[in-house]
Image (cartoon, rainbow, N blue to C red; front, side, top):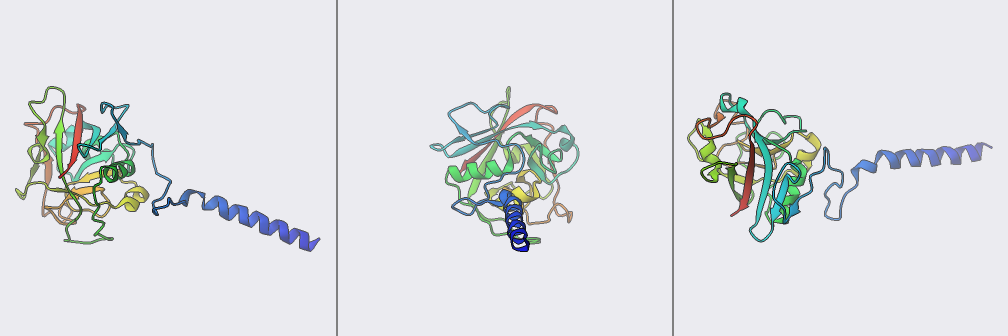
Length: 228
């Protein structure tokens, strides 16, 4: 009887461990299969919209993200450029994304962008690495596609230079929602290599949306990331 009971207990323990580990499966390349938040898988051959918030063009090597303007940050500074609305800091970015940050990372990989993955933990004063990305913003009625530096005022005067930092695991696990940060970051999928880690928090740099260029609060915009 004791032997039978022991076998049953071992079996139950095995099932319990298997169930606990179910959310941490990995793909063949080591990436976690579980993605936090609503999935917004990249699509190709469709127009970017709220229903299709993440669109890639492999030939042109671009990723387009549907977002809206957060007018609060045309008068107040923020270090968050583009954040997924479900993320921890979804309401603290100049542009509110309807695309999941982890799916966005994978979309950049699909257009053959190479991530830097060079920042670990609190890499204070270091700079993000990775492939260069040309970032532009457009909306209905805009005179043109605006370079990101034209729609953001930076206190240092440095042009914004985005790189594909990578940081997939951090972006997914911390779930801050950061697709694009205004200073170098170990969590954001892309970030501005012109400013070091902690530039905003240490008061080295401020970033405010250019209210003389950007449309009003809540206006839909398309943020385009083009691989150089």
